[in-house]
Image (cartoon, rainbow, N blue to C red):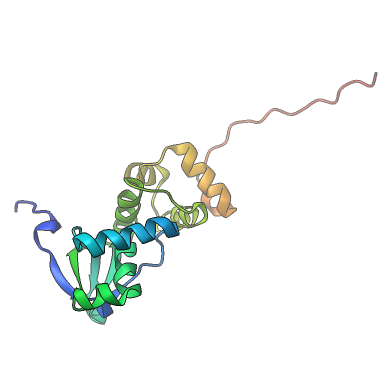
Length: 175
């Protein structure tokens, strides 16, 4: 079967069926949020949000596009103009792949909250993902992963790390 990008299957979804994910580390400052609102007001939604569909709850969990979602939920004029609908591109991937997608989308255009990023590294590690997997799928080098693991302070994140022999300081002779 030939692969076809999800962007070829954009669907209108009522905003009430769309829910933010719990792991997005991306933050947008108020001036940029105002600019995003102005952009959507002037141009409309030119980029769909990316979601994962949860059939059992009949809801869409945001993978990318949280701030575009915020605009419609926080601005009555946009909500009314869009008839309470957002353009959505659906991906069907497990949670670790969705987390990786969120980070890839965000890193390609913005900055991240360090504490939230460290929590994502922790969660991916707890899901059984290796540092090599995290590096490949989130675009991080091993030093960045190490720093983020250190922030969480969890020894479990280092259980498979092989450490070299450390030097032992010698006491200097009294002068």
